[in-house]
Length: 211
Image (cartoon, rainbow, N blue to C red; front, side, top):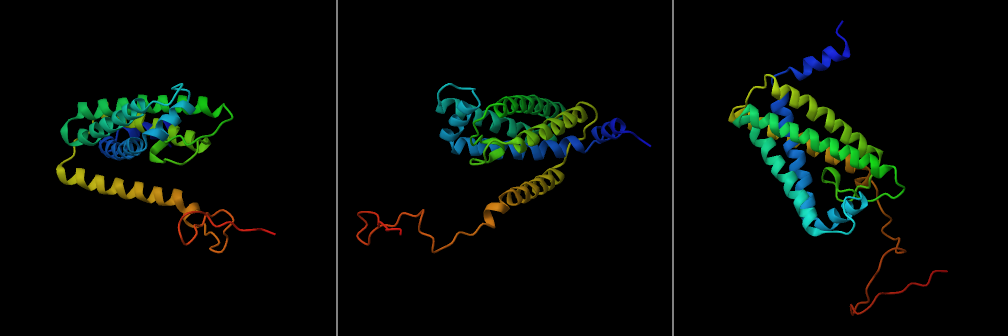
């Protein structure tokens, strides 16, 4: 019976692992980079929370977003273009993921929690789940990089499109599942304690006297 190391090596040797992983990771980094690009202020605040910056800087946030989008383009272009490009992009993704894990682990040692802008979620606070996702990303990218450096096969246009559709569907399902607690939470429509209502004239709020 094969042990865990043999099973892991067998997985890393699968020729279809690297192209599939490269495409899915490309979509993840594209999603994450786009979210950071659309929310540079929140991204800059997260960088301050991680102690990467002392003060929020919009240019730093946009640079990080641009770097993730550029890496996403390489990851998505690698499978149909060339094994060397794919292996290099996966290696960069692996190193970047290690940096994410180290930064997240250091931030979790501090008491403050803040929206970390990780994995495309603009309002999810930093937590142990964030670290777990980062560690999983390191493992996946590292194994895929080893596979690409070995004998990874390239994808044709049809297979490349198919894997993109499969990856997008899987990420969409994960996004919906992660939002289920919020989607299933229904507020009382008659609870006005935390709402601000305007007068019919629109010039000021209506005040309620609570007994």
